[in-house]
Image (cartoon, rainbow, N blue to C red; front, side, top):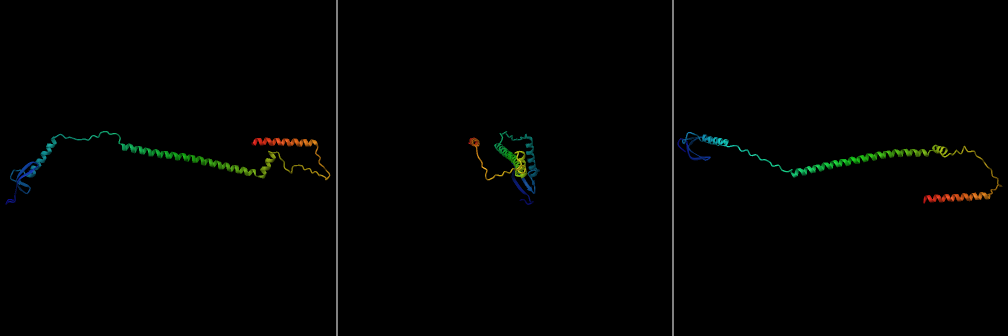
Length: 188
């Protein structure tokens, strides 16, 4: 340090340029009229001009077209499989629900038929219905409508069977045996 408060710097090198002189505060005394910051600013400006004169090279990275990524294809297949499973499940559920509705309708029809048959059965057990069927379809008459004939048998009356009646009974018995054999053949 000097008596007037100045320090002498010798051999300062900034980015390849040598600076010499005495420094007082921020300014350099001696060694030129330019200050250190002026020289540094000039240096930076020169570098910028030099850089501006050079052609700019823009580097772009061009991505080469690659095949579809395997991961994308895998996920697409998985999503498609899941969607197909969901659609199939819904179609099975719908089919089963249609079957259930059809069976419920069939059950309701059978219940109505059962009720109708129960009512018919109750009507057939009714005495008025039985009487009507007996008189109209079977040609029967009420017992009160039949004329009653009373025959008195005295103790001395005898029943005598003639030979003609015996042969008629034998013929009747043979006919009944033939009928019995016919019925047995049908059931065998």
